Length: 610
Ligand SMILES: Cc1cc2nc3c(=O)[nH]c(=O)nc-3n(C[C@H](O)[C@H](O)[C@H](O)COP(=O)(O)OP(=O)(O)OC[C@H]3O[C@@H](n4cnc5c(N)ncnc54)[C@H](O)[C@@H]3O)c2cc1C
Ligand code: FES
Image (cartoon, rainbow, N blue to C red):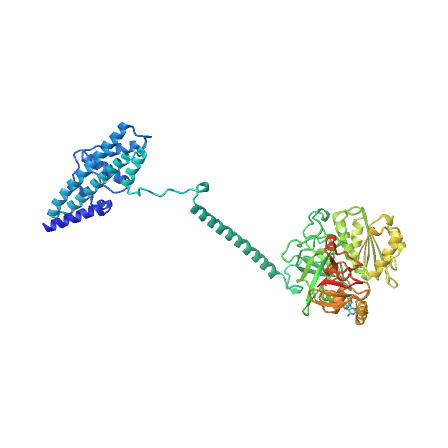
């Protein structure tokens, strides 16, 4: 008896505490053994506690008890906007019946449980517990419907409450919060975080690619100014200067292309070939080390600046591009070897095909594209022919049909650089007129004009010289004399364009003059203060700021020392200067106090950023 009471207590405890799902643990066979289905009614599976299983289980239970199936009422409630008094009464009746049948089911099951406990029939006990729980659930749902109806809830609310109870859902779920675009704050926070992550990943990728590109560029370039011997597997075809038939075809005309190069590019070019032009002059053909066209554009007459590192110091020198601007596959510089020159000797004696040269972008205003005038007179002396040769090559490459006069002066026919090419071009282009004069022709086979450039030679060679545009390049003395002749011949000064390759006078003479002036400056001699290096130097009359700087060991970059290349630009902070040549300065630079140290002279004290 005691054992039976213990089993009963256990059964009640389980009925009240254990979830309804326990019922599912009873096998269908056991269920059928204790609850045979009525005749004609198919055997139902045991009731489950959740979802449709719970509802169908409840319907079966109601059918088994001979009561009204509940599913007819609650689905109907969902569709009703409001309860009429009749419907309310029906609902209350139904809820009442549900509570009664629930109570009955519990008490019947309790009875069964007691008997099963006495027999130690565990399967029957478990079944009884399940029935008690179902009865309780039924009672509970009826009670909930009653209370909701009494509180005046809407039909949907009542139906909802019932379903929630059946499905064991929380009765008062927190309302969903919706923000902008229907997203909650949490949603937004997550999306912002994800977007930020994506942006950071993209930025990291971009930075990585930039670094990789920079690294690649560094790896393909030698240290600044250094000349590195790298064998060239397949150098372009060698031959005489001029247009290489194997080189890539020219693209659009240079005059149609973008404005002149602004001088921002710098990098290395590979020496593809070296040509001996005359005993003292060599041409260096330079190509893009990575293949394809050279990495800049230029106008006929512009120059490159080379930086050469030797014995721990870097020296810069400018060299005109002598090749055609229509030729994009290479550029050529033609260099005269100076007996004691730093860079020209280096190029002649040490540089070979395959080497890399450190180069800064083309610059210069001594250019002629064909758009500036309807004819051009080019007068050159010695290696000063290089910018004029670029004009001739570019114009003939393009088939420019206006008159091109080239007047060239050199010492002997052996120094007549580009002679064969000019003769060939002249045969092909009737608008090209070449006249050369040799100052030391005596005893040679030269049959042409002899002596220096003269007014007679100019007027005989060029009709209507006074109305023409003239470009002049050569040794300083030759240029001065020729310019004076042109003015005498009536050529307006603004129609005469010149380019100096270096300062007038020899380097050693100049150095001696500066040294003498510096040794004993008078008390009235102005002083130039260099603000960055915190040094100062006397600035005697006729001495440039560059020379004064060199005297006290202040380094100012320089190349031409003739006001052409712009390498020596510095900012003037105090005082005023005069400059004989200021070709390398733009109007904006002048307005911003930039001066050319190689040209700047003064009669008052100066402050210069250097
Ligand atoms: C815009 C521009 C374009 C140019 N284009 C060309 C070009 O196409 N081709 C070309 O060949 N040049 C060109 N030059 C000239 C070129 O830049 C160099 O000035 C030239 O090659 C000499 O440089 P270097 O370093 O060999 O001589 P540097 O060392 O500068 O010497 C200059 C001169 O001084 C002499 N010298 C040097 N040291 C001494 C000493 N201790 N005692 C006595 N004399 C000394 C040298 O023999 C030389 O004549 C151009 C210059 C400019 C500004
Ligand atoms: S050094 Fe070339 S402009 Fe001064």
